[in-house]
Image 1: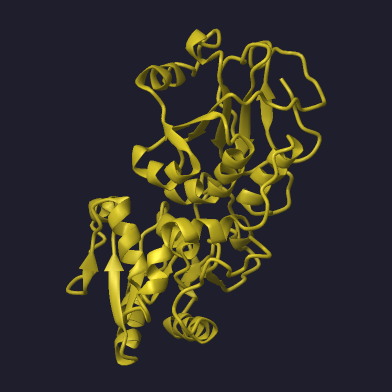
Image 2: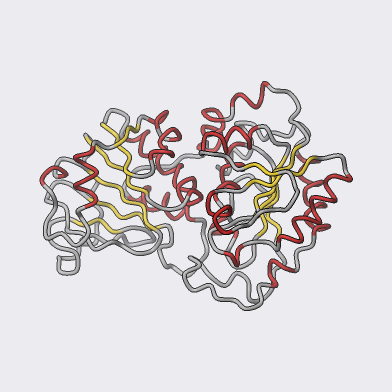
Length: 352
């Protein structure tokens, strides 16, 4: 088992998890066949995309496979990733609690992206590596999850150079630049992975009224989880994309977006669509969507959680005190900064 000296990740080699020898120097992984594993939420996946880009650049001549939601594979296919074979998927699914590394995986190097907990799996045999890339390395300071991942990869000699955001927009948002000025729709994403990360619906209604008075077209966008919870905005204009491809097309057609700490907001920011991200319980510095404006009250108790596993606030005033007027004013500022309604491939290139 190998622990890097700084932030980051565990690499397990030669032994079993929990009872193996510790070493202090990371060993560069072999690179003829690489598996990238990510089974988290959409926003976590998109925050991981720069690391996937870095791996594809470093291992350009290797066979690259992705183990995760097939619906997200189109965002990795231009980088050279393909879906894992059924045989590989079965072997990966059987790793938890297994006594030894499956023979079918012995010729692969694995980069397994997790939030903060390393799964209980056997160690890879000598000459191969299973790297557990943690989004939250537990250092106490709040760096963005993609930066935590990049720091570990850099420790392996796998750099994540500036330019990943422009590359994502070149690959997936090129059509928006040829459409001219965007339409008048402002997408409102009222849902979130945890109810306490949601801005109150009544305030979304008030914002929608304000947008309409300004000649814009508010459009509520709900996913399967919101529909299941019954989060229906009455008689308001509503879209429920059937898949991630439809969601991406809808976002690319919008003038702007507004929402909380949720996956579609990450997608909008990475695609170059301007907008306002409402944050309260979680840290924008850790989880904020690239390219979007943050709006938060800055209460002394906020942020109060890193993973939402311990989020149990009886008075989420950190979000409730954000007024529709604050959101509208911040939106106007984004429109002034981005006259074309699109942040092109070069936007924020020096940072991302």
